[in-house]
Image 1 (cartoon, rainbow, N blue to C red):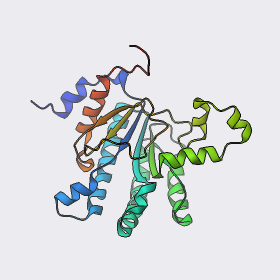
Image 2: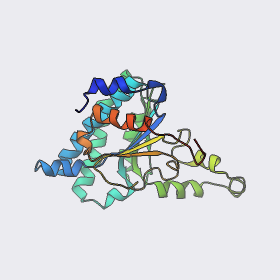
Image 3: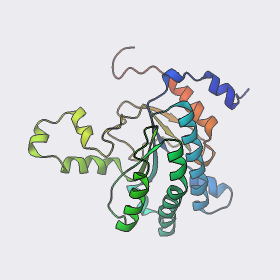
Image 4: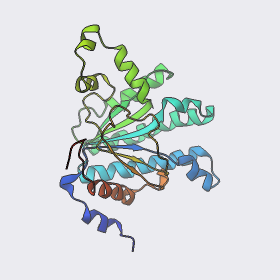
Length: 241
């Protein structure tokens, strides 16, 4: 018999939560198609799932959640969908910043400035900065993000002296995620079994959880299932348990 939300919550060990959860939000378009609605309708419903899971993260005391919102490859989608996604992010930030501040959440945008209008970029960065005095859970939005581009851009910033002294640990200080711990758990919805250029460097030892649930249906109960699955694993990092 399927467990309800409270039963799942009672099973969770709050002392063994992942410090950082990365989420590849997939399935918005399919969710909308199943309902014979435009793809952007699915994206708007998906934004509600983000809010729901952020609320759960605060309740549980998670430290970091990173949402894959828009990849560098998403520019290849139809123009109206791209414009709609850019508009949706801005609208969602305007709506949610007061709520994020109320919950003491820090918001950070991770990604490239390439292809983005300077005015638009300034607006969304200004909104994110409104949360930077908070000291609670950090929510990262991977927006115009690509793992390969992140690595290339980091290398371009290195001086010859820095390259000569480079280590895997110090290289992380040059990535867009500098100062953020690597994800312990990466969740992907809609059943797809790939990273899609998400946190390539950082996910070297991440645990993966894939669910057939489409992102707009990924509610708090689904998030608890993912966390419980994570807690059932033994992490060895190449060693022996």
